[in-house]
Structure formats: C-alpha cells, structure tokens
Length: 424
Image: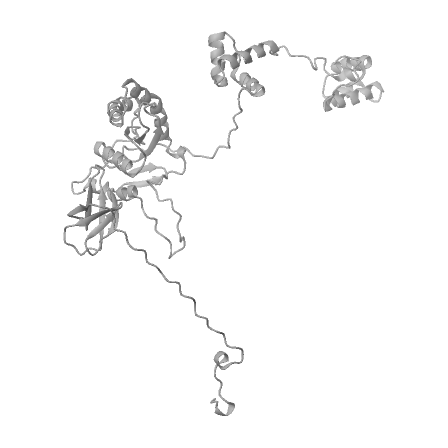
C-alpha cells in the first residue's frame, strides 16, 4: 500500500493495533504496556510507532500488501499452459494432462494447480462428489465354495465386430476363481445355463450372492404384510431351481456389496476385449471358445489362496436330474379333451390321465416336455392357429327400484299391538 492513497483496506487486527498505537502517541500508555497488550515485542512496537508518525494509518499495514509473492506463477506461463491443453489435451483429465505436459512439452505444473486453472477457464467441469455412504468392509469367506458372487456384464465385448453380448460371470469369494459364459441377453435361460456350467466344473456352491434383477428376485410389492394375511412371495424360475438344488440366495442392496464380481468385470472389459480382438472373434460361439481358453490363464494370474482348507462345493447326486431342475417350468390347465395351450400353441396329450393341471418344462437345449407328478406324458403338436372363441355378450339389467316407506308406516316401524293385547 503506497502512502498518500485515500482508500485502503484494513483488517480487524490492524484496526486494533492502530487504536493501541494511538494511545501510545497520546501518552495514555507506554510502549511496554502496548507490547504486552498486542502480544508483540517492544522493539516491534517502536517500529510501528515510527511508521504511524510518518505514514499515518498506513503505518500498521504490512508493506507487502497487494504485491505478488516470490512463488507466484507468471501470467504468461499460465496462459501458455492453457493454450497447450486446449490445443493438444482437450479431453485429458488434469492428472494425465500434467503428466503429458512434463513428458512431451517439458513443462512442470502440479495437477491440482492445473485443475483449478482449467475449472476457472471453463475447460474442465468440477466433479461434485456425493456424500459417501457409511459402509463396512466385509472380509473374504474362509473356504472355497462357501459363497459365489454372480452377475451379468453388458458390454461391447466384440467392439462392433458382431452382436452385443452379455457375460454371465461367477466368482468364488474366497479365491477369486472366475467362471463365465457369453450369452445373447441376461435372463432366465442364460442364468440357468451359466449355473449349469459352473456346477459341472466346480460343484454346487453353498451361497450365491447376486443383485435384485427380476430374473433372480420377485420384486413385486406384497399385497398384505400383516399376519395372518401376509403373502408369501413367489419365487422366480431361477430362485425355484436354486431352492431345489439346495443353494441359498442372498440379494445385494448395492453394487458395492458385490464388489469382487464388479471389479473382475472391469478387469475383463480391458483384458478380455483385447484377447477377443486378437482372435478376431465375431460370433457368440467364437467368443465362448476364446473365453474358455483364456480363463485358466486369467485365474492363475489373479487367484488368491483361501484362508482355510476344505471345499464347500457339493457334488450333484445321481438321483438329482439337474436338467429337469434347470428348466423353465410352467403350470398349465389340462382340458377335458387332454389339450394344453402354451405360448399360443396347442398340444395334444396322448397319455391317458385324469390330471387337472400339468407342468410344461422348457429345457436349456430348446426341447420341451409335459409332466404330471414327475412323470413324462406323451404329446404331439396340433398344427394350425388357436380356435377363435365367440365373445360372451352380457346383457345389462337395470337395477330394480325399491321405494322406502315413510316414517310411522307399518312397513318401516313394524307392527305394534294395542296396549290391551300386549303381554308383559
């Protein structure tokens, strides 16, 4: 601040200091008392008193006020950095741009400094961080097969060389061993197909940890929640199959809860995509061939040792017909002429039975069976379209008008006997 200027800014601390120095100049207090009051040395008080006598109120203001610091970055340097960023690194983040400026241009600027410059210049949008939710870290399970995380990854795996595919993945929580299959979509048949492949390779896991996709969990609201009218939620086809196989399902409330499968998908979206590119895979079958060859290499690299020995995977018993369990089962009404309608197609049951309902099973290989009580029924397809049923016309009947009797009427108040005829 130059002396002689009419307008200047003073801090509260400087105003307080000036008021005390004025008392020293007016001989109300001495310099020693002023030093104790301001908590500075008496030598500093003498220097401030001398400046106030010469410069007035400006004497209490620091002489470097308003001047650039010794470490201030020059405006020309800042302008040059912003021009280089806008020209060569327009879609780079501040950290990566800082690294590339040092590597290629020989210009060293801190990434945080660059971030503030870019935000102020409107070249970078400030990331508004959401409030982090309170989460607790969950340790890995101790045994192999104790819990398996499952999910489907929607990604452009073939990089526009072929159709869009979904990777149905299973990862062991204890060891990071991964199993996966490519499918056209994420649904009941792909989920059951992936589970069948996992069971064939490893066995039946104890728990499957997955999200609340409608394929795995019935998300319809319960009509009644109070006892004794509380509804029992209907299982999905996948949930029913897991229940019959003795596999417990746990549904995650957030993607972070099943973080292992989410992270392995992120790794595969980088590495597996390049493997498919090198193999020039263009179709679903080709992608699955590449995946089967790559998984042993991938698991060997990222596998970890389980904390405890022992495998919780269970073998499939011979009496269990896994193909029947891993099928889409739909209950249908069997008509008096032993015909069944399924997916707008008529089927004639040839086996004589008195069953009122039958179960239509759709297998993973595309075949179909009609069962009753676990016994297969012979059937044939009825060619042709469904017969049209004439609509039922319901005649509207006008409601009958019933007049209401007046008050005091016999028909309203009832019959009353005379007093002489009443009995006590």
